[in-house]
Amino acid sequence: MIALIMLRLVWGFIGSRYARFNSFVVRPREVFKYLKDVMKFKAKHYLGHNPAGGAMVITLLISLTLTLLFGLLTFGVNEYSGPLAGMAFSISEPIANIFEDLHEFFANFTLFLIVLHVIGVAIASFQHRENLVKSMITGYKKLI
Image (tube, rainbow, N blue to C red; front, side, top):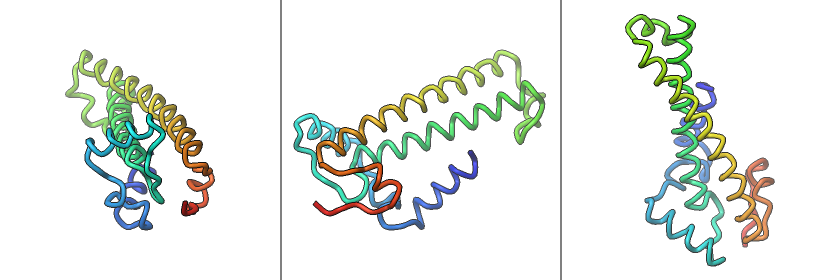
């Protein structure tokens, strides 16, 4: 998981034009405006990530990173193993329980985000009459 997160972070800076963060990270105001336009069936078409998709990429990366971090902390404390095991001796049981609860929360939150992402892809595919799943796999999207 560490490798996948790191790969996406690196790809966000040196990847193709539409994979770079600077092509799709926008202010929250723009994301909410885009979502309002989606509800009105007046959403602008984007060749790369739309504002909601860009926000989802960032949110998923953050949630996955926190899931990983709290999972490693929990593993280190409970099993005295893993890269963060050295911290295990200085962590009390109540704190260890909080790490475990946070790991579980972010794991479930990540699953929720995935469901939202699939719904968003379905809605955008329908509204713009395009196959976004195919575009995600091939890296190509038709101009409309």
